[in-house]
Each structure stands twice: as C-alpha cells, then as structure tokens.
Amino acid sequence: MLPIKTLEGHCLCGAVTLRAAVNHDQVGACHCTTCRRWGGGPLLAVESDQPVECSGEQHIGVYASSDWAERGFCIECGTHLFYRLREQPFYAIPVGLFDDQRDWQLNREVFIDQKPGFYCFAQRTEQLTGEELFALHADD
Image (cartoon, one colour):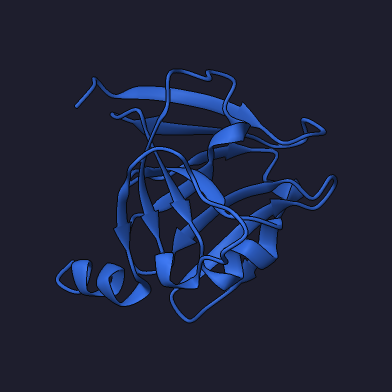
C-alpha cells in the first residue's frame, strides 16, 4: 500500500470540488447495468473507505439508485461525482475527476457477468460476478 494521499478533483464546470483520501493506485471497473446506463459505459473508479469532502454542496444532486447505494452528480453540468454505500463508509469516485492522474492500475472488474460483448480491456484483472462481489462483502 502507498501512503495515504488526499486527491482533489472537480466537475466539468468547477461548481463542485471533491477531496478523497486514498492509499493505493488502483482503479476498478464496474460493468453493471446501472453503471453502464448512468455513464454510457463501465464506471472506472477509485475506491475509498473514507468520507469524501465536497465543496459546492449546493450544486450536488443525489439519486438513490438502489436500496443500498446512491449516486452523486453536479446539478449544473451533470458530471458524475460518486457512487456511495448508504450503510458503510465506501465511495467509488470516477478516476477522471482527479487532477492528479498518477500511474493508475486497472486491477479489478466487477459485475463481469453483466458486461456486454462489444468491449473488453487488454490487461488482466481480477474479475468478479455480481454474486461473487456481494458474497465478498457479506461479512462487512
């Protein structure tokens, strides 16, 4: 693991700035139907188990996308800001928001069972079905 670093990023219009503490250089891809509908393709995100700090909160809209999670977006420009769990400290932040575009490593793909056949990533990753992902976090 890397030392904890606070990364800063912002939406397209700059109305919302967020800061997230991360201690890794890993990016995950979610292929679930909801993420693909939300963004037109897989969600490429950096995960954090620390609360994300946001400025410009009056410009943030939140949508309850399931019984367990919600998604944040800028109400001014529509930029996707985060996916977060309601009951646990977990955020997935789109990697493209961050100003620091370090040497990210794609390491995991989830909901691989929902991935359509028209795209694939070249690098090898850990691949989990939705059922395997839920089982992995059942004890959390």
